[in-house]
Image (cartoon, rainbow, N blue to C red; front, side):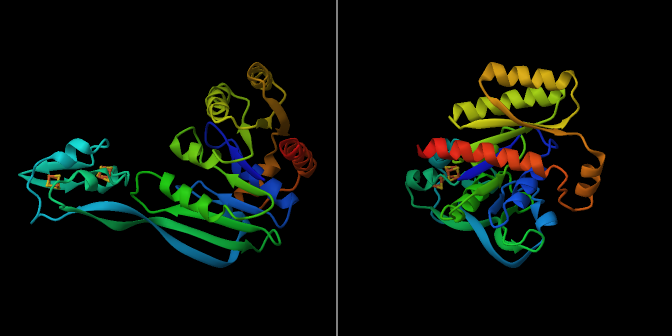
Length: 283
Ligand code: SF4
Ligand code: SF4
């Protein structure tokens, strides 16, 4: 069962929830798909690490063959090719590797070459025995993490048992790629107007993808903010599966790279609810 942990905004506590759940189920796999800023490794501290370079295909132009006809530039939906001074130029950063320009070039002047975009790594945690961590790290300057997230999740597709995917923040294409094949999505929010606003956006995504979804209110203080989140969830037909109280000591341990276990009973309760969803899926 693949459980994604996402949120509409950064800083709500996705990673701390992913780590808390993982520490209650040693032996599961955690996938850190926040490839622009992975941080699960700071807590799970992996060893026996294996790394693999991920590449995408980008076009290269043979200037000897190029006639400057501009067919490729007109064919590219992403404005990744321009013809300047009668010769085509490719802007790798804008290229989505669709291969369309290759098919269209009447001179056969375009070929493809591999461009490294990042690495996926896999290793076993030294802090939570038996837990495997897979993560992606996007190269600096690569504009989109989506191809790397897809490569990371493809590597993980044969893993059996429970898998937790710590997703990128926000509701961009990266978040969509990370959550879309999950069996259950936990959306983590905080009881603030900003948290509520971005939770509504994240719910739009999971409902569009038809994903079973639950909400965790983190840094809960029992104030008006909690009520506003609960009202939103109620109006969208989504359960609040847990409320995690604001805790100074939890935050201190997190900032020191430690997985705080002070909310273990909450984690157990979340697992119980997730397993109920798993049983409903199988039934
Ligand atoms: S389509 Fe081919 S020949 Fe025409 S400008 Fe592009 S690369 Fe050059
Ligand atoms: S591969 Fe696709 S996105 Fe990239 S330059 Fe060619 S047409 Fe544009």
